[in-house]
Length: 540
Image (cartoon, rainbow, N blue to C red; front, side):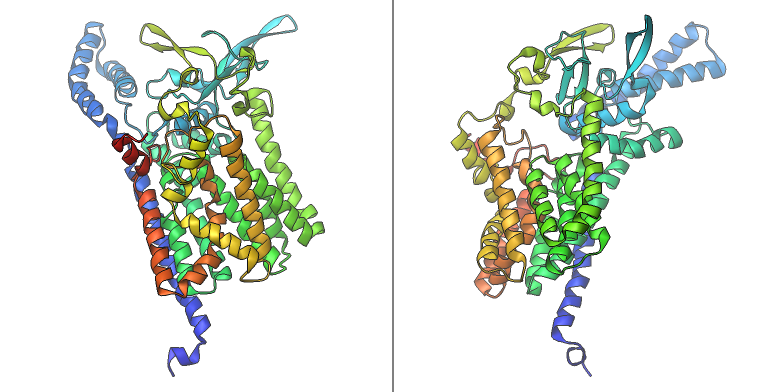
């Protein structure tokens, strides 16, 4: 008896999709891992090569100098090794897998939380006696090392005053401190047990940590997407399209090679959504689903503040479906995550309010972005100004909000122009409201639409920094919506899957989206291809 006779066609189709899904997921994870291993600041390769050629000559000269000082034998070799270590750190540390001030700001925080040599102390008077007090999260020492500077810093004193002189107050990362604090755990093991120091082994440490925090979570994200597509889509072609779009057609894989909040925000939203779907659609009341939904729904907020809209709607939906279990199992992990977010910010800055809120303070004493600081280069002490006093290029931002909205949606940083698969999401969400494919989809579509509109209004209509997220491969503030929009497009793709021209249209939209995501190759901190093309034509 043939397989088609012995097994229902529907079950055969489901098994086929699941088999193919694992192939796509494996390929997607491998592509991301390959990108990660290839990441390097190749723009500095020529500098590194020339300085490496100088090393032998400099080592010979240093040996003669040490001999002239009377050193010999093991003592000479030890002094020479110490010199070479300093030389490599100061002269050869121009190449590393940290590509931007944005991710380097977080890496600096990870280092200062773990490496005792980088801890900063103040002298304080307690009961008439002077004592040394450690200043957690301060970057004052780490930025003195060549190649470890960053523009994503703020400056304030213990009382939260900004606008300080070069020798007052302390420097901190402007990024929320929870993510670096979590990453400090595995780095502590590498540093204190394995002896791996980030400054000496940037590739070994950086790539290992990125595999833990980016690649593995992204693999889980792909797997959960396949499960959701299998659960909610009607046609096998739709399921394959959704999975392929999620694996290759969004900017999440582009950002997998750097330490950032957008990827983890998207993964958190995916886990929360995947946990909520059986609760909402299938009346599943297993306790761990509520725990996962609460834990990762709240963690999405710690990575992307506008995810608060998604989190609020998620909470209301679960309270509507199962109020008691939501209160017992969902709320406690939410409180733990929110306490960690506010607590780490309080320890770092003396307030639960994030540094971003101090960007446009009218009073100089309240503006943490308006400051000067000093760095030492050899015998020289250099006074530098905060980059944000006079930002350059795209960081200056647009002056016209209407123009900003145009380019953020359909222009050079456009959500729909760079990744036109999101047009299918917009149509699919509307279809889900009007003609839900399965019972319960109307509520999901409404929640995703409301959260999307809230975020777009916030980033386009409210925030003052009209800079598209700075130099990046797209409008990165919205990247974390990828899992919600991928699920939201299912009704539209299901409809197109039944028509030859519809499948062709969907594939064209997918091809453009994959090309846009692949264009940055290994560095997401580059301008989109549309921006560079318009710049070449003189349009921007």
